[in-house]
Length: 442
Image (cartoon, rainbow, N blue to C red; front, side, top):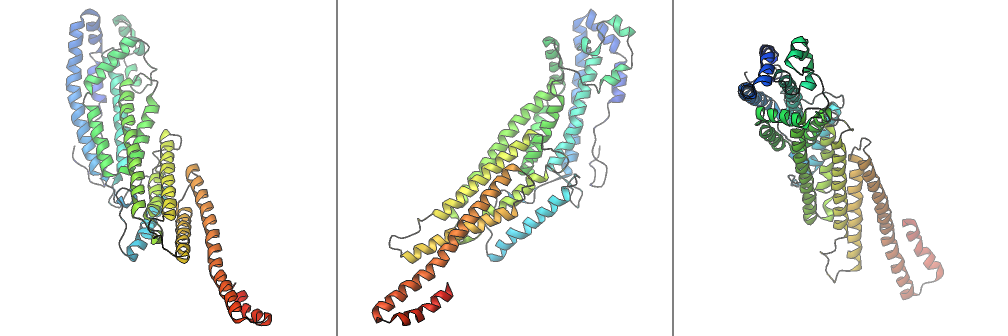
C-alpha cells in the first residue's frame, strides 16, 4: 500500500473475506483432526496462527503509518499551562489575550455541527486519527476471533457445531453471518482461556503497537488525550460482557494507563499555575493563567462536539474534575496574590497601605471579570459553578473598591477642613461656605 496524499481516500486494511472463504473449506478436516488426534490439530492451529499473525502485524504497521501522515500536531501549545510563557511587552500581551482566543472560538463554532475538524491541508487531529484507526482495528480483531472460533472449532457450543457429524449436517454458509455476531461471554472457563490464548498468540505484538500509537498521539497533542480516552471507553463498552475478552482486556489496560497519564497531566498544569503565582504581580492586570483557561476549555470541549465523544461517557466526568481542579487552583492563587504583603516595609504609610488594598481589589475585579466573560460553560455544571463564584467575587471586590475610592478623598477633605477651622477659628457661616466644594465633590 502506498502512502496516500491528503486528497486521496482514507487508509484501509486488506479485506480478509476471500482468505476466510479459502481456509474455511478445510474446516471439516480441522474438526476431524481435533476429534481424532490433538497433536495434529495443534499443528494445524499453529500453521494458521503464525503466518496470520505476521501478516496482521505488517498490515497494521502500514495502516498506522499511513494515518500518521494525515495527523496534525498541536500548534496551540500556549493553551497548556506548563508550556505557556508570559508574553513580553504590552502589544504581545494584548495579542495573547485576544487573537489566540478568537481563533479558538472560531474553530469551536465550526466544529459544533459534528463534522470532523480538518485543517486546510486535509489533516486530522491526532484524536480523530486514533478514532479512525481503532474503528477499523477493533472490528477486524472481532471478525478474526469469530472466524477462528468457526475454523478451528474453539467453542463448539458457541458456533453450534459440537461434533463432526453435526458439522456435516450444518449450513456451510452460516459462518459468514457469525463473523459479525455478538456472542455472550463464554461460560466454560477452559474454553474461554483457550480462545484468549489463541488470540494472544496471533496478536501478541498488538498491545505494544497500541502503546506506541498512544504515545505518538500524546506527544503530538497532549490535550487530545481526552478523545483517546473516550475512544477506548466506547469500544470497551461495546464489547464488554461478550466473548471478546482479548480485545476488551487489552483496551482496558490501555485505558487505565492512559487515565493515569491524564491525571498526571492535570497535576502538572496545577503545579504550573502555582508556579505562576510566585512571579505574578497585583498590577499585572489579567494573569497569564486566566488568559490561558478559556482556550484550554475550548480545546477540550471541541472534542465533545466532534462527533466522536458524548457526555454519557465516563471521560466527561474526568474532564469536569480537571476543570474543577484547575479553576480552584487559579482562584486560590489569585486570592493569595491579592493578599500578599511580603513586599511591604514595616514603615509604610497608611496611604501606601490603602493603595495596596486598592490594587488587590483591582486584581480580583479584573481577573474575575475576565473569567466570567470569556469562559464559555456550554451548560457544564462545574464551569457554571465557578462562573457564579467569579461573579460573586467580582461583586464583592467591586463594592469594596468603590467604598475605598469614595472614602479616601472625602475623608482627607473633611480632616483638612476641620484642621483649617480650628487654626483660623472661622465662623459657622464661613465654614458652610468652605464645605460646599466638599459636598459637590462627593
